Amino acid sequence: MKIRTIETFILRVPLGEKRFYSSQAAFPERSSFLVKITTEGGLVGWGEGGQYGPPEPPATCVERVLAPQLIGRRADEPVRIFEDLYAFSRDFGQKGTYIEALSAIDIALWDLWGKSLGKPVHALMGGAFRSAVPAYGTGCYYPDHYRDTERMLRELGEEARGYRAAGMMAIKLKIGLVPIALDAERLAVVRNAIGPDVALMVDANHAYTSASAIRMGRALERHDVLWFEEPVPPEDRQGYRRVRDAIDVPVAGGECEYTRFGFRDLLLGECIDIAQPDLCCSGGFTEWTKILALTSSFGVLTLPHVWGSGVAVAAALQAIAVAPPIPFTAAGVPLQNEPMIEYDRTHNPLRDDLLTEKFSLVEGALTIPTGPGLGITVDEKKLARWVVTTPDR
Ligand code: CA
Image (cartoon, rainbow, N blue to C red; front, side):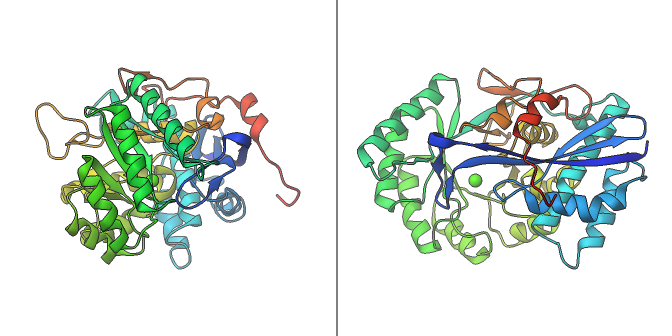
């Protein structure tokens, strides 16, 4: 089973009036970078690389640098290939673009390997702890008209009530774009809308200094918030530790971290209670299994960060299937010792319409695909609608 071709796809969907804000930026579009690897025998594997960043750098990295090294190699050696390519790019690519490119290749190779054996990726990684996983809704972003406070608060309440009505047992609110007092008001609106039984998390996308994060943390304590995600910039390890020591809300992070080496440092730095590696950024399934080994040894619950297309959602579902309860109990409790899957609820056709299969919530949970590989089929006719070609590529 040798690699014959590696194709890259940059996908873009403008959001028009549906654009929204996190603490960091407006989102005028959704984009994804996909890789399709085909073997000499005609088997096909799909992978995705990157998340918030532009898709061109990892695409160029695959096309110009990594793919030429892989043509003709055995496709059923994803772990060895990751190590070889990481060793090749270590001196200049320990984080960022190269690891995103490696992640896309790794996911596609595991998909291929599973398809060649007729088994889902979770079976190749050693067996699933669960067949479905409760989902938490990532939404409650800031609208384009976030300066119209009254309207923003009214619509926020409506959005949060919608998630509750859809059967979600947990939702995540964005914070950090506006002053702490207004975010505390938003928090109260959402808590009132969902009631005491739906779990509530917040995500600052590293908007604060540790001092501001601790002030925000006091408001989070009052509203029974389950975790405070990315309170401070990812490089500020000491800030993470200060926040974690000062407030009675667990601290989550890791979506901007790469490989087992990055997570080793977050764990040794005592920065996080919950680790959130993104499969498409942190090194695919190969690094996921190694990150899990580290986090489980530190007693840290590990939930994938998920933001991309349907391929990224499928990869995260395969990955979460093999995350053990931390610690073990006879009947796991979601978000206590059992993982939940992040389920982005903002408008994104690349997530909802790219695959032949549909992800849908059943009693608040997503089913883990059991078909070979990732267990999904990319609809290439639909894919063609969103592919962007540029003259120099
Ligand atoms: Ca986040």
